Image (tube, rainbow, N blue to C red; front, side, top):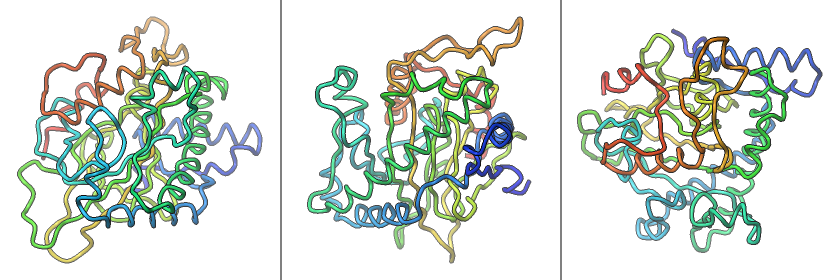
Length: 351
């Protein structure tokens, strides 16, 4: 299947043009979320200069010497700072044992957390932990904070589109996202000159679903990202010029009783030989309030149908998923329910 047919492009620029335009955009989003769980968005309002500055900051961080990057490493339960090559295996989050993933990352959260508001201070050692910045690179902080703000605004606009697409008021999710867990992760995939081949089953990023509500992804137009399509087969995805990839997470799948898909995806190593081997991505995760109760939406429950998942606090689910992706322990994880059901077969096929 052609990639452009599998992952549709939705133009958001007409969202403020009136009810007819809103209905059309909401219908296009609903179709993509039902069939694929991935879409591409243009007309998104994120300035090209802001993206360019983010990429300059990206280069500055990953060009640092190893000891300076490792000095920015946080404990596993804190989603901040530097994650070195091989420190995670995202397939663990689905209970699948694979070799460590072949990427390094840098993570930030909100940089202006209020110091005296209880709703924030309650999680100041968790989802609102302080960011860890490289020393002497003030431009990096400035540019990543600006990019974070821009894609956060886009994610919140998408949440409004989602509400309308689900036959809800456009502000339905606002009370559940007003102190949202948000995180920007810069992923650097690079093959060292003369490096060894990947181990059997080893990926640049292992097969997984995203954990929360919505992910807004900037990615180089370089092959590597693959998703499991509606036919259960892996399919490569390269974003259109100027588009962000958007995909849904487990919490939104739970909210919609699987009307919308939390899609399994991975990043595969490049083939040996000539051709691009480096790939950069910047994934922004908007995952709702840590204390939001996630339970089946009334518009997603047909008469006589039962919810597929029990209610869960968003923070408990996210914390369990995060830690399971960083530990080889494949024991049942308290507070988390996977949303892929029988599609787990796709994860273990062709590893």
